[in-house]
Length: 365
Length: 89
Image (cartoon, rainbow over all chains, first blue to last red; front, side, top):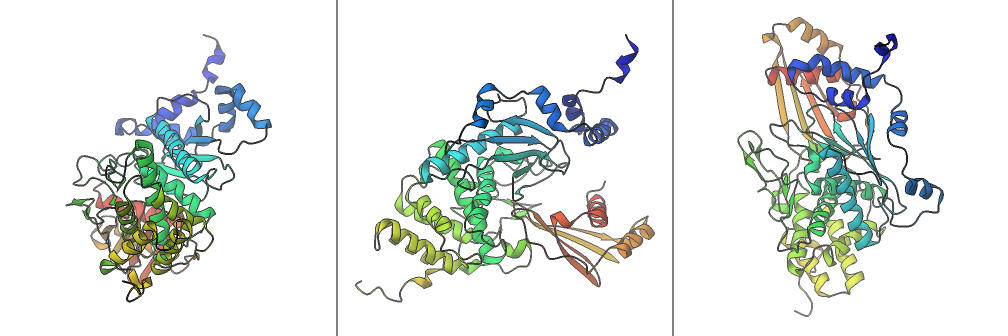
């Protein structure tokens, strides 16, 4: 062996594997690999060397953009809390990798993009073809997924309570919808407007899954985050839009606290004023609209909610009552005042305790 | 002296609380040193980010609410230590 051999660096893919090791016996090696990745040469250099742009992609870069064309990048954060991550794991046009989290994120962004583009003619998050970015393997045993204003970020879960967060298509759709909301109504993420923001993400997250599976309202689970809990947890999902408060009931986690009507509204300072709790109320209203209309929820119900989100009439700090009125107005605008769709929306809000916008007595009834 | 860390929010919206009785810790002096060094009352108001955690940290007479991105430096050290004690690590 030549003397120069000792200068050989550990290949990046091996460092990534080492950095992810959870076995306490290899804790030192894993930490060393993480440190090494941190001070490594810029990753874009690895990426250029390892994955030259496919010809189709290189040609496209110079051409005028075509509306509705998807452009995904999935990054691997290799257990660090730094974004976007250390490695570009999969870009548009690259083949699947051996990492399920990377492929699930890639496919989930695809399904989400497809719903918004084919059903609502929305060209990505900003309606101007914004590239879709996701980072997976964020943090160590990180029990969360979030939208940081630019990208979706997914943790691996701790393995005891939570599995990896890319497992649920509704969660991927949920995160991407936060981006759509940010670029449209930009609802303030606190109190009731925050709960409407959350509900929008649940509504379109659920629609992404229903659309991908070809499920009607009657066939769909209406669950958010199904499969995220490990088998050790007594629960099926994070939330149920159809029956808020019933998704889990576990001796460690407690019971799903979501209310399904204003009678159970939770006043709290936690969770930015209960944005993930009170979202159960508008979630159920959406489900009730879908149930009343039947068929595919991404059609009339999804269209009404999409019109409301993007129509420009919602104030950033809109409350539930204001949001309810805005959906009624959107339904009347698209389907006509007094239409079946309009009536379904009014009746749904009434059922969840937000029927104040209804006249005390309908004049002709 | 007791430290209480409660974490709410996250996409799951599940609240978790961890507590530590500082005086019962074998390294109580180092806990007190850390608690005294924290910049209580200096938290900045920032716009919340979707699905990120919110931490409420209490140690009478102090209480602070910090969005996850602000839980860094000594705050992160504290949260990690409180969790480690609770999780038996």
